[in-house]
Image (cartoon, rainbow, N blue to C red; front, side, top):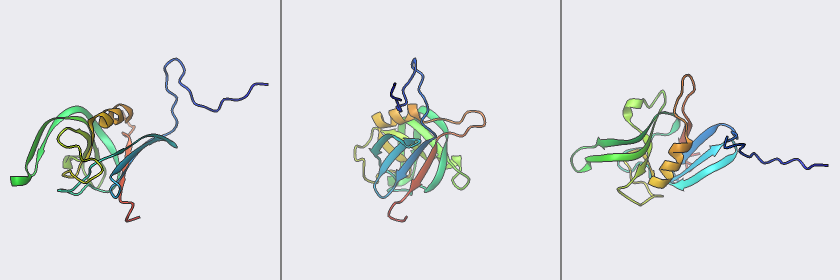
Length: 155
């Protein structure tokens, strides 16, 4: 009698899906967790909004850019950052794409686990690259990967 192997394994380099991809960002713990179904793909500290509020709710990735320039703020709060890596912009009906919120790599600080951003979700560049390769951009009628941003202290 043969034992049944319950593990999901790639066949000839083709990855078998474990379920829907979903990214969770907890503002209270400054932690990002990415799941594929019940499988935890990665968990990492992040830095969310200190000078600007990171929006809460359920979003989808609307575009992925390998790198882009980000600028904003004014006066002493002004920033101009070239080549921000692994940018995944997200939006929903209440937070339009034009507001510019994203998950992205960060080369200008290493204080992850503490609020440090103008509203985006800052990540270590290596972690952002890993997430960027895993997460889906929208294709045809299929939305990009879902992102839920919440505050576990408020739940």
